[in-house]
Image (cartoon, rainbow, N blue to C red; front, side, top):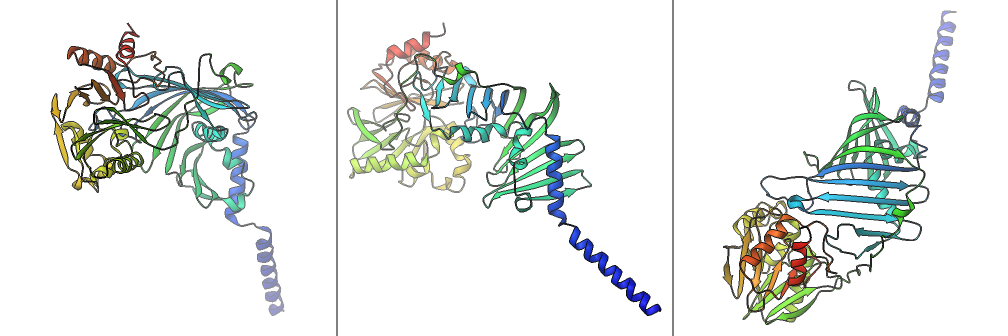
Amino acid sequence: MKVNLARYLLMFLFLCISLTTILTPPVSAGEAEDYVVKLKKHYQKTLPITAFSLNYHFLNTQYRSHNYWDYQTPNRYMSVRMVEFDLDKKHFYDNDIVYFSGGRLYDRAQFQNDTESVFYEKSATTLGKRIVRRGMNNFDRYKNFIFLNVDFLAVRPLLEETDIEGKITIHQDKNAGRTTLTHAISDDNVIDYLFSNSPLQLVSINNRSQRGKFVYSDYQTTRGITYARTVHKYYDGAKEATYVTFNEQFEVIDKVDPVKLQLPKGYGPAVPKSDGILVSKEIATDLYLVTDSSARRNSLFKINGDKIMVFGGSGNPTLANKMITLILKQFPNKKITSVYVTHPHGDQISGLEAYVDQGAKVIADEYSIDAIKAYPRFAKAIDKFKFRALKHEQFINGAQFYILENMHSKRQSFVHFKDSGIIFQAHFLHIPFDNTIAKVVPSYTKAFIDFVRSKQLNISRIVGNHHNNNISVDVMNKTYDANK
């Protein structure tokens, strides 16, 4: 009797274990599905939103180019942004006003309607009245960018995933009261979403593929919608936030204002797309201008016997290598011995190593040389760099160099070719290709004009490193007088 009872108990226990195995789904999959359901309920008020406006501003450490006023004391610049967005119609309008040191204002806008996607400037800072045509995929690119600024929009890819069991895994940290959902969108696109459980809020997003981390805080409720007012954005493992975004106003709208989905009167034509082919033209005896079909970037080189000096051709490695190839093809029996740098921002120095590999010396003022030595990208190669330090008003082979303190860079120089009256400069004058006069003129632009006037320099042409390579004295004077 006892044997039979024991047998029945074993059979009953086995049956319970079997039923438990059959009826209980895998823990991770079930928990992930349950948590996504919980999130959808939490965000249910925001899920129907398809058109909205967002006003925000952000501080930027300029991490991409290291364009600091002083490389030893990294600064931030501020941008104010106003956005209108329609997901259903794939329309958007974006107005971004950037405030740079020295009083430079960069007021730009872009939009996409049913037929075109266009970028233009309200401030006429660099493009003037010319426009840039974007492809119709600009909407999706911009959507991904703007969604990361608002927590309930940032989580939508997670909430829209249909294969939760196959694409989403969950990790619960009960001690910390936090939950992480890892969304493997593809092999090369994996995103971690960290939530606090009480209250339920998005804490951070870690985009492993893009090496970007976004931290959301300062949650507030306005008109029934709760969202994070502050977003700290970190890139490439940075310990200090690259961007700090402050969301000021989010509004649900019916559609993007139709007026904002068209160009204001007087704009055009479009900036031609660069064909990438550099060409050189002699603009004075032994002095050559190098540019491409778009004229967005302009450089000079000067022949001095069997030696060649380059001015402004080191903005990036691609430009530097093309420049070197062009020069050596045109003058195969001569040697590039030096390259001149106006100031140590990334968009002026990133291509220097290509010239150094040719045996060329870097010519710059002492401050800029110190900044180049501290530039992170050159850390492994800096020992092979050779420098020649400039002094204010120094002459080298018919070129005279002037070094000014200014609000664009702690030290910035320009070069004057006395015989031809040509000046080469990078960021003292921001003159668009079409000679439109900017609405706001930076203090360092006026300081530059005051200086060349005080020196009574003979000027026939000013070559800008960016956009306009033929600035006249008349346009320079109109720029000076624009904000009197």
